[in-house]
Length: 241
Image 1 (tube, rainbow, N blue to C red):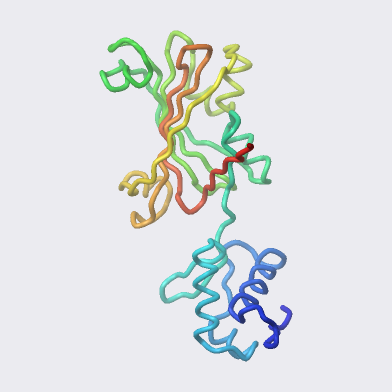
Image 2 (cartoon, rainbow, N blue to C red):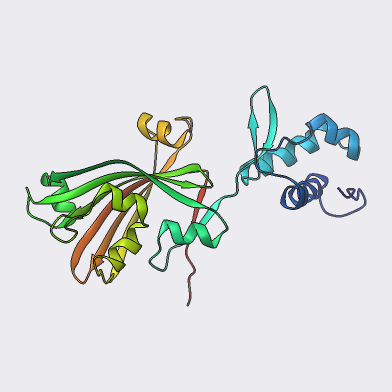
């Protein structure tokens, strides 16, 4: 690392932040342990309060995390998703150099209850395939999804097919789906016990609930409820005038 400039107009804690971020980006791995606050004080001749402020800011910005009694570690990189276009989890993970994978945890055919029928704009009692998938990036869970698709539109859909193909590739190439558009709704929610188990996180960490309605012309052909790690995914929108 370089040295802090005590004659600079930039605050010392901010200079230290920049040095640590540079070190993380260029030389450190995810979950690698950082030197202690005391080590930074000694190395740069800084006060404990200055180093502590730098650590606090870095933690709030998602660069580091603290494990009680163990130390401070490099946080996993956040996964950023642009919203103004239809996207798939598999494609987006590959774009950022992650290895995407999915595990189908449950697959069944159910009759729509009143609430699901309303969501999908279908008749109550009509049949849909329901499947639960765990989405992973570099073998680390980041999202758990429950999807519903009309049985008559996807005749012959099976757990085996979903395990062997990316869902949207399967829909496009096997079922000839022509996606028109999708709507998504986002809500920060407390993490329930089942989601915490699937994502391997503590329930104190909030989750992001995402409801997706995917259309083929004027018909909803997919309704998915996703629970994503609130500390791993960033969704962005570019606004043009």
